[in-house]
Length: 217
Image 1 (cartoon, rainbow, N blue to C red):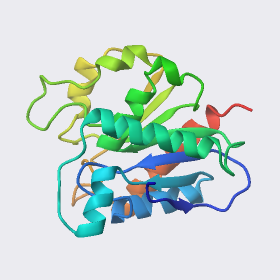
Image 2: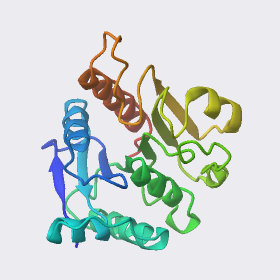
Image 3: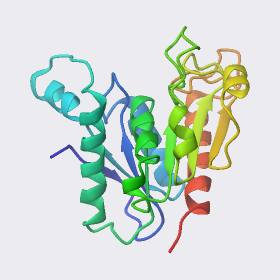
Image 4: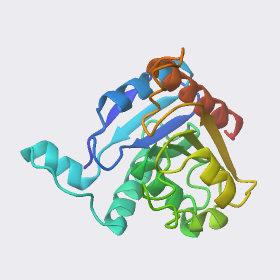
């Protein structure tokens, strides 16, 4: 079973099942601070780790991410777990940082999972590998059955605003919230007045508004 950490002791409001990115664990500084910010904005987060990251935690050896089918299976198992647990009556959303968000978006385009959760939230979506803007990872966006929010820094090498605006077709189910000056981890430019913590707070506010606005029941 994956490692769980929960932030938020509220009895209502949305729950976000939050996956980590390819290189950092569920309790990285980014994930820790993001979870706190989400809690401050009325969202309970449940974090977990994919199998390869659990192995890394156990033996300290770095290894590449599991193949996509294994990542998706692990994510879906976590959806099943939450749907049968104490948070089952709360509005459920899924999402993640970078790779974790991409896996969540793929589940949001899987017809067999229709209705199992209410939306997807991606923090720093890997629209394409850095330096390879011809390799877009958005082909499944047209198959989404639920709303999707991407919170993205305008200078993210995985998809800058100009590239995304020019190459990603408009979709009524897809909303992109841009963080001016932010990189892939939402770090601002040195000359910006806004701090990294403030950027994370803005990301959490956008995600919270999206989840509260799309909660049903």
